[in-house]
Image 1: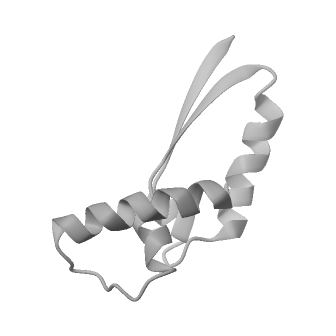
Image 2: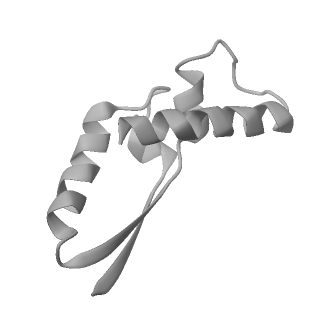
Length: 82
């Protein structure tokens, strides 16, 4: 089975806003679902910090440690959205 690696950046998921767009996720997930019988699909997605910011009051410009915490929290939220 051939493998496809797909990298999706934060700007793709947010559409230039500060929130993750569920519509964009659906636009990405639908073709992946259709292709998975023929290909092994590996999805590399960014956007974890943006996802966490939707559920917190933490603003941009925070420390590296806070960004790491946001990424850990946001990854779970992002996976739920997918």
